Length: 231
Length: 301
Image (cartoon, rainbow over all chains, first blue to last red; front, side):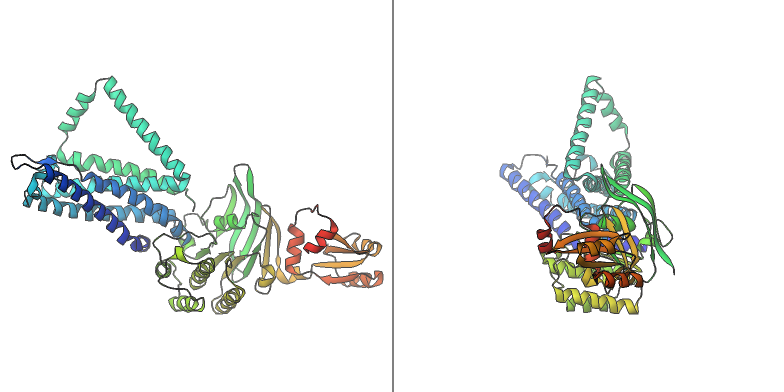
């Protein structure tokens, strides 16, 4: 465990960049949304949901990918095993997800206290999470973050093994598979059943339970790929 | 003597290229090895396999009595300074020292900072902004200060000027005397390190050509110069590595069979014998068959 902690600290010099870019991009996205909502705001309007929150999660994918491709070759050169590296990065993903979830919960509280920034703009909260208790709320932010961070790590390990071509090919393949699945669902007229199934899920399963399984699947994939990676 | 590394039938293929072909040897504790061979001979690949950074296609490697791949107990005693080591974009020299301190059990911070001062390494500079020479100096510093029981230096001198290289050799030897360990030095500057290395491993096109004590090698080959018939007479029954003609005389590089009897024979035939330096021997052993005219060869020599 001590060794894993030392490997985690390989990431430390990169933290100012990772945090700086993630949150300044979020701030810029927030500012632009705020300006455009303000421009069209009418006190009689209800609350607009922007979904701008998604960008925080999108940025996290890229950050995780870059961090793996940048630091893994160095770690290997410093006699760190692939297993140690993966466990360390997975641990980092957990810590980062919880930390970001705390920040997002805080921003959500500010958002609600200010009457949605005074202009009826939902940015950090989501309507279906309004009834969630504090723990579930935190999980609702943290677990999807865990999913995307492990997706980023997975893409990083694909890059280690097969380079940019590998990343582009696997993303293309994933979109193809998802597209075909969607077409199949449409063809067999199953959307209604899937919608029902989703609505029947308890909020905890929907926000945390199922996503944890997705994160675990990404983690298994990334771990298996990195075990044969070379610098 | 304790064996720290054994390689048995190690083979590495990349597609239809065989980078290493059935390589077997053992490395003893507390010895400095020179891993020699031309570019593309397989030196880096071999070191990558020994340090668990690459995977052998077949064969067996044992380091400190265990396979090195994904083995923290083994790797914690190994340091591999790679010429083409990649460093994270945001890392400064100071970051490298800090992480090395945490990851290498025997790391000596005072020694590292002393070396950094000797090599005039700027602690606050980003590694990606270092010159070629400074990058080499950083690698050398990490490799020495890590004091790993098994240390590999893969062409550590690139971009280092002769004074800095001498500094490296001096510091290596001094620290080795105080903290004996097994060092593998891959290099092309063979004459420079010939006093440093105790044993030579020579690879050529993926095959291990030599695995011998440096002192034994030094006496093993000679250049015999004389009239053609005389040299023919001397070379008969001996291994001739190379032959060139210069203004009526023949100069032949001969391997082995150079006892006192050979010296007497040479005197009798009026053939002049000169010992071959380690570098010349390696060049002769690994040179491809030449197609150039003898005169060009002489000029190139």
